[in-house]
Length: 407
Image 1 (spheres, rainbow, N blue to C red):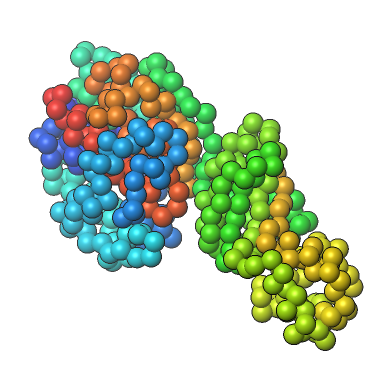
Image 2 (image 1 turned 90 degrees about the horizontal axis):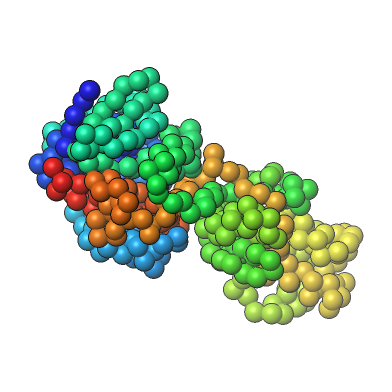
């Protein structure tokens, strides 16, 4: 049986950060990963570029228990995270909206930098180790794999993530292990995920992209809004703006509440803006009336949804009521949210381990001394733009450095 001062479960972002921090503090560290190599999910982030962090990330930007994240985010701020990566050989640069990417624009460079830094600090990696059980044993902790192998650590950092992206290693194994040790769980749901709508409403728009605003409604009340690109698919809507507002819809759907997603193609216009367009383009057919304002197919779908027909009519024939109905849809076209694309397509899991069971200053369990947690497995999640990786790095570095103290 392998023995270590610090046992790290999970070779994702939080686990690698924890392993490096613990090893650099002088601890003998063993990191176990169920896949053949560490960092597979990191390779897929940021469209293969890896959005490392966001320079504006603060505790108030997080969902779940954002206040709990304050200690880790303050101790390992975005600036500190960039300095950490610079120290291990990875340079970064800031882009739009505070997003930070590796200078090489390659997620593989991030994984390599972490892997090399961990090995250089003396850390040991055990791959193809799918941990299924964790138990207190002989003054430490023993993790067992399905094939019977076992590893032991004086302290342990659980960084097994959540259920998002199962093809990249996501599962509920960490949640199950921690619950078996007495930790509570906050209900989980897919977040940063695509939304399914009635297919007949959007099928003709497949592939259409529009810059605008997405809004989430739960029981008729606005729950979230975000500006950005909206992408239409044959099953519903996607794109950064939609994914940003998907969290409350995901929970509402799980609770059988009424959920709606609104596409706002022209949220910045003033009421009545279509009147001048009708006068300028009075002789143009309605089929092309909105062309140049929004994508042609979207314009035609909105005209039909406004009850305006036939589209061969001239724009000048639009009545005040028709113009008002069409304008309302350009401002906000609400669609029933029938579901999400699920954990298989979600970028992150909302919910997780109840943070009341952990000390925010160390991320050590209040129930099981010597047991720490980091990353997505805890009830902390953020939006698009580097926020979730910032939490992974910050919580991993904090948990790893604190776990090393117990050796």
